[in-house]
Image (tube, rainbow, N blue to C red; front, side):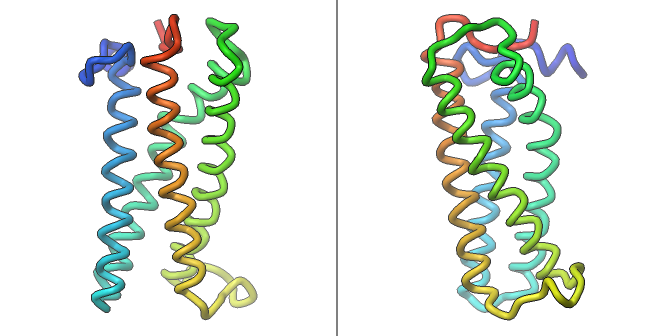
Length: 161
């Protein structure tokens, strides 16, 4: 599996397979969140809950499996660096907003599935869900910017050998 993830990517950039797969999956997750939003507006709340729960679970796996380690290695530990300052700034901005989106979004999903203690429950779903959706979309857009920065602008791209 490691060999496949570290093999050349399929999007025509300097990225490896793992980075290309991460980008594609992130866009699919964003599309799922948008589908869930549309389902809520159509008042199909059961389908909305399933789609949002699935999207949040996929996103959690994606972040923990394919984003945490590259951040640790290429930004925090600076393996293969140094790189231009904008590389670290953009990536850290993405990690910060993405972490907030992930934590808040998982909380909203847990609440929506009645899996939090009574004192953490809330009634204004709309406001919480809109904030979670906005954070996820912002993190996705910045993530696309990170991908473009890492694999089209940096002379020596941060990939595992």
